[in-house]
View 1 (cartoon, rainbow, N blue to C red):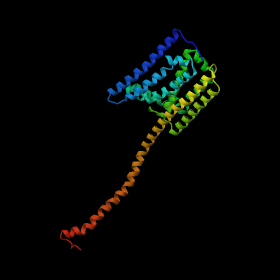
View 2 (view 1 turned 90 degrees about the vertical axis):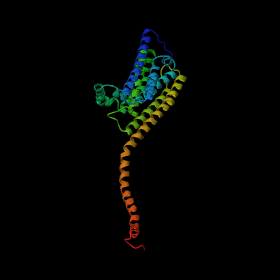
View 3 (view 1 turned 30 degrees about the vertical axis):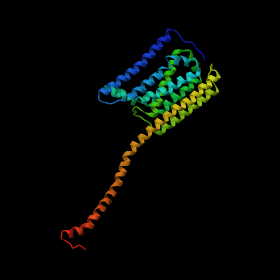
View 4 (view 1 turned 180 degrees about the vertical axis):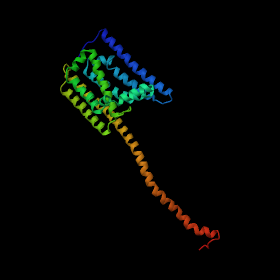
Length: 299
């Protein structure tokens, strides 16, 4: 699996990608500063998540990791995990849409809100659609000539990595839902899609282990498939933990008013009983009090 690249076109593409990555980080920093100046808090940890996500994605198309990914299938698979799973998860946890809504002026913020509520946005961000784009795209890449072509054509390689990043972001956003979503589906549906996506990823890894892509040595393919299987499973476990934690919090908030109402209803009879119990000693002591006042004789 060796393909040479060179020329001024590749250098220009690298500079463009570096510029886009830097612009994304600068825009996030600007949004965070603006939000804080308006008196609203924004965690620095989210800036760290956003920066790490951009760097992880950028490293798969520019620099030593990108070059190695075109020469070795194992490193290619490491890049695949970075751009398709790690970077999207980090970017989603950074909540960029929420930051944009807080930062932008009223008119552009309303436009973003209308866009999020539109039918196309609802379709593209639905868990089923996002799952098909993310998991299904991998099958197209590895079981068609796309994989071999992307190793020889730098622009195609960037486009494929871009697809993995965008589809991975949509999938992570649809499952863990960090940013506001006007059409958030039920957690059960998201859980089912997550399980199916995990199964698809595992089956594809086994397929690559048994049937290496064209031009990839068997040993390389098997090592890469193992990395895809176990490395992907580790990231998926992290997504499962985040998803379950958020589901638990949301369910707790929904149950809290009902629990408080039930406790209040149950507390009313207890309060009445306690009042009567408290009055009983006073009633029993009434004769003694009257006797002490000279009203009744003490028995």
